[in-house]
Structure formats: structure tokens, C-alpha cells
Image 1 (cartoon, protein in one colour):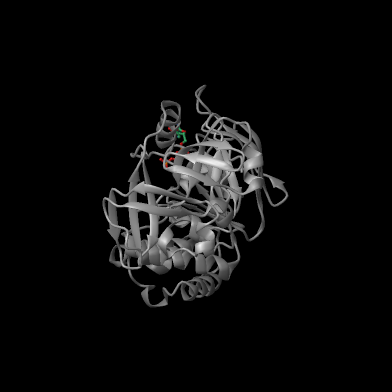
Image 2: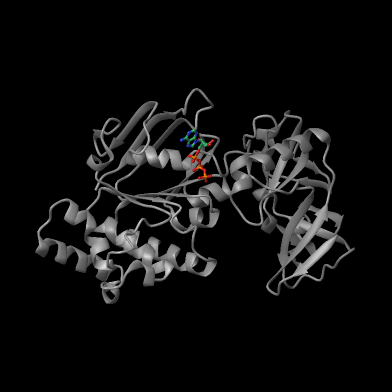
Length: 384
Ligand code: ATP
């Protein structure tokens, strides 16, 4: 096994815009790292450069302590699991798993030992004589992983392995991959555009936009401390709300009213003019359900609730607002970057299911301002 180190990796196809632009990521031995981002952000290209299917324009790709830029894919000792599994339909499960061993000239007894060990780990031992066509999507996925396991590869590389499966199976396989990776302790790089996979599978997640690494952090860090507007908007569902905000001392004027924010946040945003506040839906609550001392600290506002969706344990409420043109422009660009389709001109908040707020109410809403972020509208940087 080995770690993977990417140092200032650049990929240009022809003389166009770089598909991967100066990316440095250091993956520890045994670590599970996710590459995530919207379509075209360069995540597959980066993975293909690790495995050797794509030339590296500049930078160093290290596996263990070896520079592999000029090494052929078969000499890198990595195991790639593709979206379409790339199984041989005419071969049995046994022979599919055995394939890389046979190619390497392993003896029959070695092949048998390794295939049986891997199939036990993957719970495929009862299906060894079947053909891939007679397996479920999840079983096929496991055969593809079996083929990777028997090779004693230094690392596993996955390129959107679950995107062909239905939602239920995708959830099951996600758990399965997480379990197997922990059990095998093998360095893993996993490409997805699905933020749920990114948040649940990875030790760390690398968020990419247009070839540039935006943030590399644990899922919790990404969620709680997104480095910029793009990461903040990409991670979380329903997504973070973005509102125009003017900071004056510890007061922040939002479209719905003025709230008080902690002094250390206010200091970082002082004198910056019109900003974009980012607040996750769950940072809001019906003020009637919040402890009176919290309401007294000035972090409530009154606003008209347009739509309410009661889901039993929680309630979604929608509150429309207007943003000045300069903020609208930034939010429209952000939506484009995120491949999104809403203009975010409404606040989406999740209240406790016990809330009695209903459609048309002028409701009093409390916001946990310790969870309010302030972004620079020009650079997108999170100032707080
Ligand atoms: P997706 O989720 O849609 O697969 P991705 O994030 O994996 O997207 P890449 O496939 O790595 O993105 O592509 C990154 C950029 O490089 C895109 O703009 C793409 O059009 C471009 N690109 C990819 N492969 C080639 C190629 N062989 N020739 C020219 N441009 C390419």
C-alpha cells in the first residue's frame, strides 16, 4: 500500500483552458479521499492522471515515494473500478475475479486461494459460477471490486461507481464500499458528483471547480466552515441560503430585518460594504419554540411566510426576499457554477415539526447567528 501525492498538477487538452489547474493533494496511506464537483470540473481527468490513462502536462504525481508521471498504467500497481464495471460477460464470476491474476501468470493454486478469499470478503462465494449477466447491479459492483482486491494493489480508484444504480441500491453499495475500505485499509480515491457520497464516504473531500481545488477538508469541516461561496453552495441539502447583508458594528442588516452577530465575526467583516450572508436552513427556528433568553439576544426577525411544508418531525418554510442587482448577479453566477436551476430569491428554513407557523403568517423567526457566514461578493471568500 502507499499514499498518493499530487504536486501542482496541471492538465491541458490542446491549448484550451486547463481541465486541471495547479492541484496539490496529499493522500495518506490508507486514507479515503473523494474528488467531487459539478460536471466538467476535472475530477475524472485528475483520477485518470493518477492511474496513468492521461498524460500530465506539468507537476509531479507520486505514489509512495516513486514519481509515476512517465510510468505506464500497468506498472503503477493501482486498481481502478469503473462506472460500467468492465466485466467480461462470457466469463464466470470466478474467472472475472481471477482475470488479473491469470494475466500476471499466477499459479492455479494461488489464483484459487486469492479468488476464494476475496469472494468471501465480498460475500460472493455463492455466486462464483454465475455469469455477470445473471447478477444484480450491486453484485456486479462487488465482482469489479473483487478483481481490484486480488491484485494487492497499492490503491483503489473509483470513477462514479454507483451512478448506474437505483437510489436504494446506491445507498446499500455506499455503505458496502465504506465498510470494505475500512476493512482493507487501502488508500482510495473516489470520484463522484454526488455530495451525499462525498459526505458519507470520505475521510477527506476535495471540492473542485473548473479545474481548481476549492477546499480539501473533512466532511464536517466543509459543512461547518466552507472556505468560499462555491463550497458553501455545493455542500448541503437543502442548500445554504445566501442573502444580501450589511454589517454595522455587530448588527447585520438582512432583507428581513437586523440581527446581532458575535463580535469576532463582526470584526472580520468590518468595513467591507455589501456582503453575502450564508445561513443553513437548520440554523433558523420558530422563535416561539426557542428559549426566551436566546430570543432576547436580538437575533430574531419578523417575516411573511409564503409556503409551509409540514413533514412531521420538521417543517420547511419558504420566505421570498429581494436582493439588490449586484448580489443577484453574484448569485446567478454561483448557480451557473453549481449547475443549479434556482435563483435563490427565497429563504428556505427548517423549523421543528412542533412549529405552528402557517402560510401567510408574519412569523417571528430566530436565527443562530453563531452559524452565520459572511462572504466577500467579489472573491467569494468566507470572511468569517
Ligand atoms: P463529469 O462529471 O461530467 O464526468 P468531470 O468533472 O469528471 O466531469 P472531466 O471529464 O475531467 O470532468 O473534464 C474536465 C474538462 O476537460 C471538461 O471541460 C472536459 O470537456 C475537458 N475534457 C475532458 N476530456 C477531454 C479530452 N479528451 N479532450 C479535450 N477536452 C477534454
